[in-house]
Length: 439
Image (cartoon, rainbow, N blue to C red; front, side):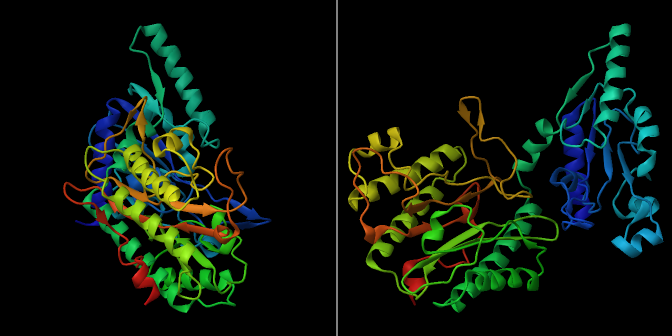
């Protein structure tokens, strides 16, 4: 199956969910970095999921109320040689029809004159308010006029809904092709983690390790990092989103690397590994590392159809809290400690998140009071951790932390697919068993 067939399948599913509504999905725009320099372009994930078209400024219309051959309309920047000299290749109005399976295309500057006629006859508009200010006034003007017309004629009320209501439920459930792209992303990221572990030594700067990681991403064909790489040694590992990456690696400390690549088609990986700078765990490091590994293993075992992310999280929490009690870092009844949150100065985040075109991917975790059941095709990270520092006060009645434990931050994260059988760990090529790390 070629890539365009994948995007066509996504469009057909989306059109089916819209019923009679017309959807307007804009592409991302260029974002200024400073002066006349822009950030590297990153396409809007919803737009990409439906089009596979990687140019800025475009606007896609999805029109289930129109006849076949007029349901997928794309407004694009025209092909102008003088613009391409400065900003690179463009497909242009004519080529996108053949190359991207578009029904009809128009120059972007015709959007204002043509949008009304394309929306006429729809039962409503699906558009994200507050996210696209460059075209929102136009959409709201048409919506207001349609409301007036329907009130005069007694027609069914014309509604305005967010595309996410229909689209994000589709994106939550990955097809086989999407999972294969994420498998490739995880394979590249795992290779980068292994290279980094092999070259780490005391006296290096965290930034040197970052360079090895991200160089591997690019050499292996990825677009680049999926998110700012976290290369955190010693106490820096207790800062969850540490990205300064400029400290020296010290003998006897741990190094936490949270880094994953993004593919050219934006599918992502997200892997974390923690290991000793000198290759050997101390006693305290070893005890906590094995505890995090056990918590992760039990949580991954819970990634099954019918379970939910709350159960995955609580499974990890229970193992961590019991282990911290056994080590004397917490005291009390495990159930009470969990209920009162008295472990959160050691473990303050959730155990995972959805993964896909966005690193923290779209899709609900709950419907009101009810957690969303896991289904085959969903992909999530499983990432328990323990962080021992003075950042959080010790809760009243809990043991004071001895210095020998402080400065230890450990997280282990893998990318896991829900299947109808055992969980499928995409990132398993990144080694994590203590004996593998110390070899």
